[in-house]
Length: 218
Image 1: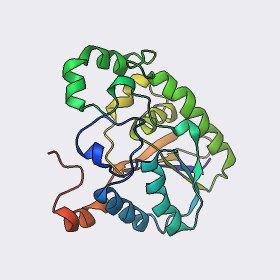
Image 2: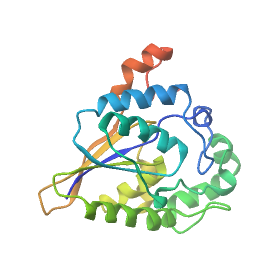
Image 3: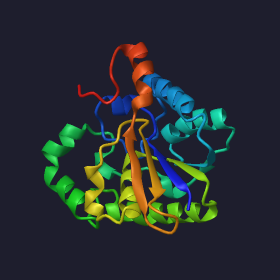
């Protein structure tokens, strides 16, 4: 089976402001474009066979940098659509935790409990993981499959790949533009996580842009 690479889309202005972003369809900000350019340089020598992308603007814009550098055409996957956060979409994360913390905790710990006006983690799994399985089946064992999708989609699919309970989905920290990889433990064996939340390629360009380290706390 192919090696799988997950990439979280690079930064948007709203995400930079600490807001919860689901299907609000925003493009990259200046920082996000800098990250995406650095990502393409970082992965230019990787033998990428296929690039599957969420239809969200932030994912597609990130993918286009990578596609241009590697001469690939992005494949849009509807099942990788961002999480439907319902009433929480666009609200400050801290506000949701303070004002609606009980429902957020139920959503986090009960996979079948939907967020208000939105979807459950189980629904994210049902629509995204089957797409991943189909993509893997199309690849040869020596190919490298890149998937660019919003963070929650990647977290939920990670639970599926590693056979973890869906209640673990929010246990995985994932920065903007982060690269994560999964490889077979042995040819017919299960996948193992071989890299997670790699943003090392961002250090130099981010320091040049605004003097900050990527992923540092405000």
